[in-house]
Image 1 (cartoon, helix red, strand yellow):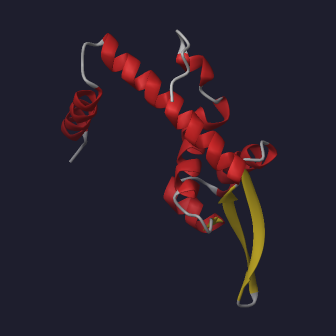
Image 2 (tube, helix red, strand yellow):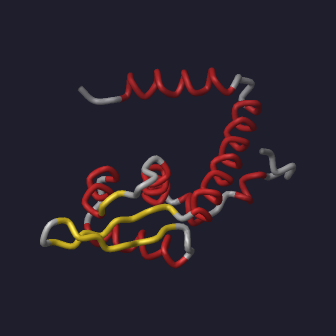
Length: 128
């Protein structure tokens, strides 16, 4: 999918572009039955308060749904990407991919080469 825009980054949905919400939606899109609050907290390495804040933003935008389930005697919050949320997130990823391809083209590189280069540089920079 291409935007056809000279500046496709203008089409990047701000709701998903925040790093923690990007992580949340990535995790949720890979979990068709949803994830518990605790699982999301662990996967995305966020505090309870931070997770609550981001979930509220995503819920208000109707890109996720929260539901309570009973597990034994306890109730657990399960978070799922809505159909709209999944569609909107995939559209966001398509625009992001276009932006990345354009950046690679501007640098005179093939997109796959950029990915390999970034990964190899990250491996060098990682402590330990």
